[in-house]
Amino acid sequence: MTPVIYVVDDDHAVRGAVMNLLVADGFDAFDFASGSDFFAADKPDAPSCLICDMAMPGFSGLDVAAELARREWAIPIIFMTGHGSIPLTVQAMKAGAREFLTKPVPPEQLLGAVREALTLDEANHALRRELADLRRRHASLTPREQETMALVIGGLLIKQVADRLGVSEIMAKIHKRKVMDKMAARSLPDLVRYAERLKIAKSGSR
Image 1 (spheres, one colour):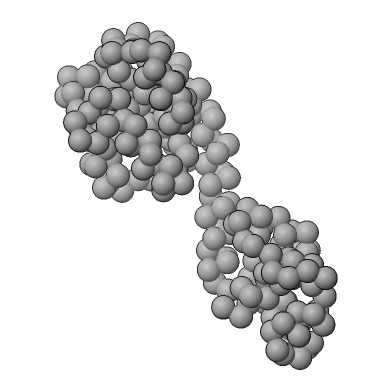
Image 2 (cartoon, rainbow, N blue to C red):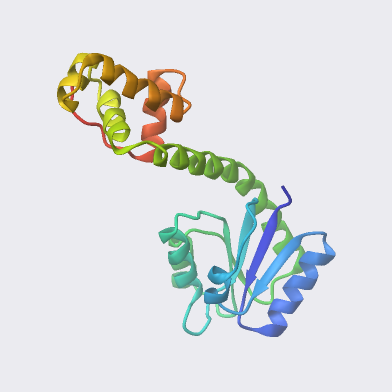
């Protein structure tokens, strides 16, 4: 998958200069004049990073970072600003910035920040895809199977699971097998790890 860089800046001249720099260096890049345009656009499923202006009208850079966090899209952010300060730097880092650069940014400094951000996100992208796959698998479970999974990862034996579900032990075993198959779990420890990644609460105890 070819990495992608997103550039969000309301200043047409700055945005154009950054895009020219990235394209000339061989990167695939997309630019947007606002955070709203950025979130409204379709995006390829690929490692990526975001170069974002801090001071934009309406939807600021910090607002963009907050929306990314709300959507659980943890791509590296490179903030740019024409008015750097210590308090603003602190805010940017708390918002999850990978880099905080003051305009005009030297080309090699920006390209270096982009390369580092993309290297970081290549590993994170694989984890995001795995999590998305786990969510799809869990969504394929019926309500009864989801209940069974919560009981099984809680450490209950089949007899106890059957009692909680109000079914026979044979039926409880069938539900458990379907859960294991749909979640592609080869063992109970696998299922527990998947549940932890999905933040699924355990039900009951032995």
